[in-house]
Amino acid sequence: MLTLPLILLLFLVVWKFKSIFQKYSIVLYVSFTIISIVSVFFINVSIFLPFKMGYLGLAFIYVVMLVGALPKKSKQTKENPIRRDYSILGFITITPHALYYILQNASGEQNPIIFGVIAYVVMIPLFITSFRTVRHKMKESNWKKLQKLAYVVYISLFIHLIMNSSGINLILYVVLFSFYFVLKILDIYKKTRVKISFNQELPS
View 1 (cartoon, rainbow, N blue to C red):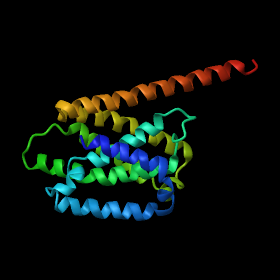
View 2 (view 1 turned 90 degrees about the vertical axis):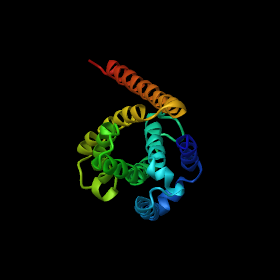
View 3 (view 1 turned 135 degrees about the horizontal axis):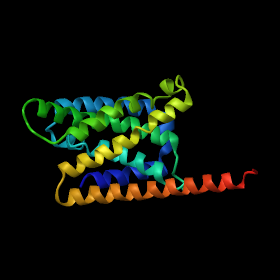
View 4 (view 1 turned 30 degrees about the vertical axis):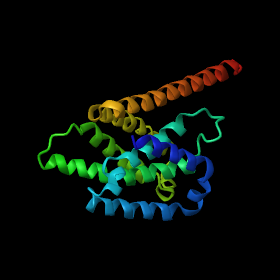
């Protein structure tokens, strides 16, 4: 249940404190990277539970998902700096969780993590190309095509969560992802309608 309050907290940051990311993004990247590395070595310490279980990383990623699916006129939608920063921080903070369970499986434990591994591997190029210096070296069209891999991440994450959750957590993840999928479908539908309407208005 830690995921939900973390999501709400991160949305609060989007609304009220986004200037912090514009001014101190590098500091935040480095700080979260250090904390994530430390959590790997002290993974069973309770304070690092959000890293071990992936709650914090998932919260970052979910906000990125949801902001991308919100209506265009929404105040917080398409906050590109926030989406970029949250994508980067999401990958950084979910890495301890991924490494922990990959190593657990490698040592003989049988956890259904295949879709989690798929999501994590696909996130790697998305993470790298989220940095301005890398993105500016790419063609805009190629970068946009690459970003479509995010949907592979979202679907793989959803399946991973369904396979590895039960009780209230399972219900929570179904509700959260269903809400996202509905918003995204509506967003695609509206875009399609606008495009069709625009084409019909063009002179033949």
